[in-house]
Image 1 (cartoon, rainbow, N blue to C red):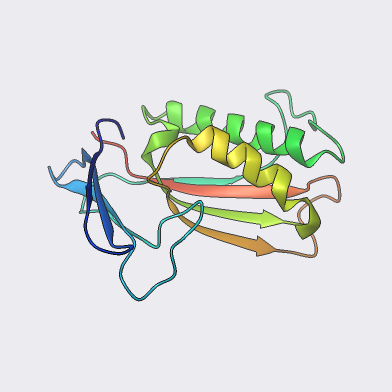
Image 2 (image 1 turned 180 degrees about the vertical axis):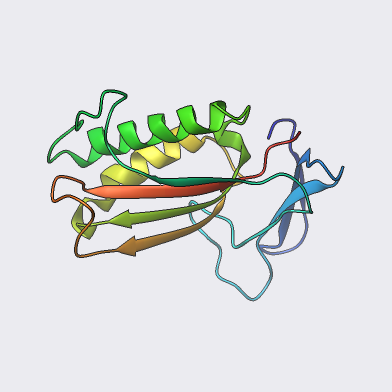
Length: 155
C-alpha cells in the first residue's frame, strides 16, 4: 500500500489510510486508546469489503524444495519472506499489502533474528495486525518457523 497518509491524534490513537480496496475505501490501521502502544504491529486493521489474499504458512524451502538455512533462524526468516513475496507478487500484490501476519516459531530464544528480518522486510509503519505463537513442533524438525499472511491488495 503506497502513498499512505498518516493522521495522528492524541496519545497513541493513530489512523493511517492506505490504498483503496476494490470497494473504493481505504484500509485503515488503528491503535485505539486503551491498548498498549504496539511495537512492530498494529492492533486493528480495518479492511473494507474488497479483495483479500490468504497466503498459506510459508517455510524455508526454495523453489526446488531444498531447505534453506538449517538451524539458522535469520536465513530461514529471509527465505520465508522471499516465499511470501513470491506468493503475493503472483497475484499482483506486494509486501506492503499485508494486513495480518501470523508467525509460528519453535524457539523463542531466537525471536530477535526473526524480528530483525521482519522489520527490514516490512519497512516503515504501519504494520499489519500480528500474532506470534511459540510452538513445540512444525511439519519438520528442520523448520524453525512458519509464517502465514492475509493481504488486501487493490484490484
